[in-house]
Amino acid sequence: MHLWLGFAALALVFWGITGVTQKLATNSISSERSFLWFCWAMVALSAAVLLVARPHAGLGTAVLFSSIAGGTLNGLGAWTSFRALESGGKASIVISLISLYPLLTVGLAVLLLGERLTRMQLAGAIVAVIAAILLSLESPSTESASSHCA
Image (cartoon, rainbow, N blue to C red; front, side, top):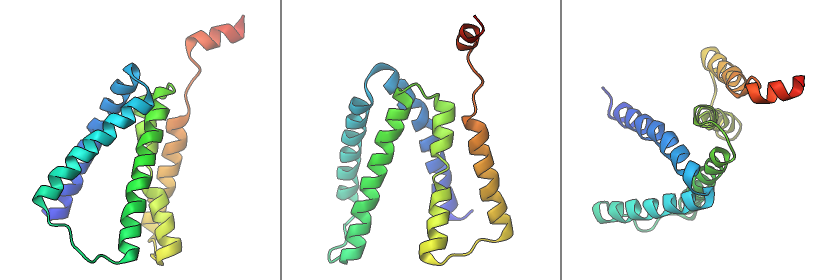
């Protein structure tokens, strides 16, 4: 097995569990509070990584900007996912939808990096969009359906 595949599988497990823990947190506290605790956990994890890894000095401006922008966008994504969960979104739907972010990455990679998709990859992206649409469709709850009939 390739090393990268093991790390990708671990990320899948971590993020899969994260969706449930985020929903549990936003059931009890605000999305802002959940996000602040998320940030504190990231600070602690970052400090641990700094102790173990040696940050490379002399990074170029573009690399530094990209890293900071990536961290900022990741944080904003986390905060908005907390808001979606707090606003009544079901974890099974919210997490599934936001986990389709690679489609945006693929689109940007094609537009900005000149990457090309095979027909099979394009078909996979189309199926993912269809899946997102199907996941977001919810039948009316029995309570709201009965109030419309009265």
